[in-house]
Image (tube, rainbow, N blue to C red):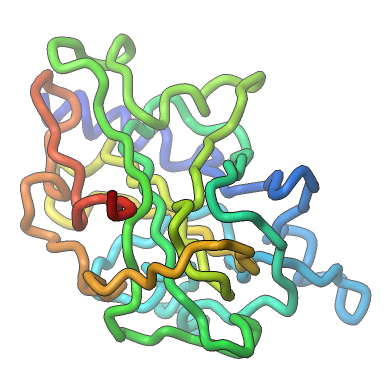
Length: 255
């Protein structure tokens, strides 16, 4: 089994991975940061609502600040940087994120977190390693008795060129304000080996309008939320079985 997984992982290592290409928020379409275009445009680079990512490659160190919103610390790009703009959204509304084509071997869960930014906005804010994040959605394995290529994961719909993307809903009870949204795929195709899980984070900034007044208080830090030794990070995806999604419980509005 490890030999098969190793061959598949090697074969796909040279293929493209992916990133969140665009978002539909409040009925408006936003092109998100383009890692192979924006850095080369200089002063003509478009202003975005999304934070910079350095490539379509993964973050593999769960203790790295790159896990938060991207970066390649090993090459001197330590973490990401705030974006200049925010998208306006209504609490309770649904946001659609469109990934670029996703490799069919890169099975894994999708997770989305939010963090409340300062009252002045997210455009100059870096969370660091403070516990500021709460999870608003996750989705994992849908089939427990199948293996690749018949296994179905949250990432599976993104493996088709024609797909509807990924949706998350902004909790309806949240207090109005500025929020940083962190969305990710955890690709588990190489996670049978310790340190083999691949994280693909993407962060965008919202101005949320709401009649709610809830500020979540059960918060986690990123990095810090995942453990490289945990069985849902160091995981044998090429065998059937159940899968427990990592991270905290999903936040729900009080009834």
